[in-house]
Length: 183
Ligand SMILES: [Mg+2]
Image 1 (tube, protein in one colour):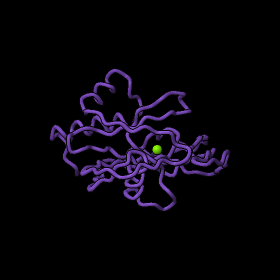
Image 2 (cartoon, helix red, strand yellow):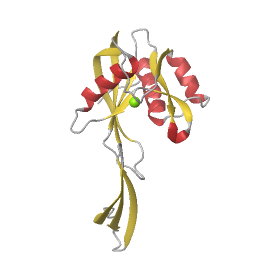
Image 3 (tube, helix red, strand yellow):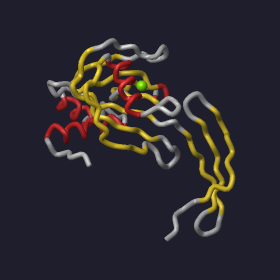
Image 4 (tube, rainbow, N blue to C red):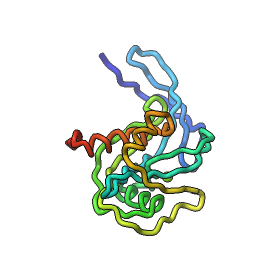
């Protein structure tokens, strides 16, 4: 079975500050043509900050696309050519005001492969020490500290709906139970 789709035409439909949108014409394995709408994204680093007492740091912010307040693990998009671990360190400090002695890569996530190439590089941050929080000018963020059991409860009852955060919380739960072995 051949699955590859060869791109035969690319049309830029929108150029944005964070994302670009392309309409691709592709050649299917059966020789027919089809179109694919693709959101191009620079990728992001995502951090699960676990304090020495086992609590998780989450940030609360307004998410305009969904018009809701969302409780999430810290994250931010990569600058051009930036090493994801450098981005993770920066976003953690900016959004939570904590510095991590250890950042361990745990997972790579394709957040929406049906329509976007966005990749999330996920890290667990431990050995956290306080520094100065300095969110971007357009970010209004409150950082809070939550017991892991509360985080799991908020996923179960639908208070937390952000996908990367749900993954991060379940992963932290496995790590703390000793069920997670990194490869
Ligand atoms: Mg952010």
